[in-house]
Amino acid sequence: MRAWEVIRPGSVDGDPLRLVRRPVPAPGADELLVHVRACGVCRTDLHVTEGDLPVHCPRVTPGHEAVGVVAATGRAVDGFTVGDRVGVAWLRRTDGTCGYCLRGAENLCPASEYTGWDADGGYAEYTTVPAAFAYPLPDGVDDIALAPLLCAGIIGYRALRRAALPPGGRLGLYGFGGSAHLCAQLALAEGATVHVLTRDPAARRLALGLGAASAGGAYDEPPEPLDSAILFAPAGDLVPVALRALDRGGVLSVAGIHLSDVPPLRYESDLFYEKQLRSVTANTRQDGREFLELAARHSIRATTHAYPLEQAPQALRDLKEGRFEGAAVLVNEHPPQG
Image (cartoon, rainbow, N blue to C red; front, side, top):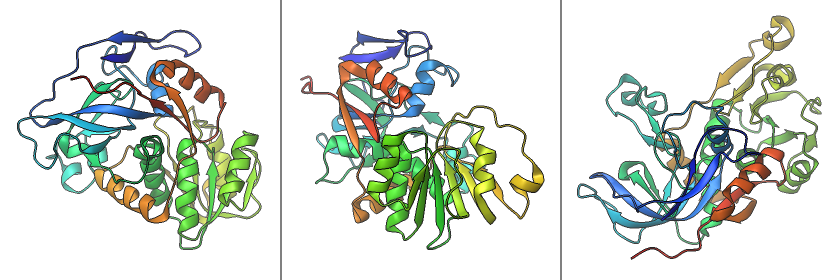
């Protein structure tokens, strides 16, 4: 099979990725072998490829928004059969026994593993996933449209819940890429007023087209105080900007796995009046199930830009440079191997 691997982490303007041929992997006893038909291109893939995240698995294949069909099952797998349509997401495995897992916070499990970082992911024709961490996917939505929901959508959902937006509240979104434009749709469907703040004019136009009340520059002041805000851009210098935009008692959640350094915060202007700053760490499977159900109920759809699997480096470069709005998706047009 064909698969991309990170030869040596570095700028995507160089050549950190290489397309190689590998044997089709064999699923473990509790795993599914998945023929990948589409895989979203997430900013976390960029962080893995460029070395913003430390190497967990040398020469790893990135990708953790994979949609495909089950090609084989491990001997201990129940509940899936060959031909089932499934999604492969970021959270790959937890120990299931630690205090975090037992209290429903498996995203904080110290032994957690992640697709496309700890194990090979979806920038390939095949990948494996523990069956307990695979998502059954509904019919009626194409592979390309579903792929970004599996991380961008799920993480945006967790970030929205962490932001504690009150019913009918005023939400600010800083950055408006793959995750934010899905989060905005859910917030709007649930009755929020959404203000988008991003440097990209095309993203601002997309935000307004989706129903945002306003769309300004990343460092602009929103037209009204915010009850909640989510920082999707990996720019730490936006943290005090977003905190100052909050109303009294407001909450800012930071959605990314990587963030540049946060400048010093001023207590009186940035944190006083019981404002809160919260991080977001991965997601639980329950988050994923809840979001996918809500996405189906509210017809949440990603704005997508398809690239052939062979063009993964170009997709990452375009993501880095903000050359598209919405989400990029790699498409594997090769049929399953016999």
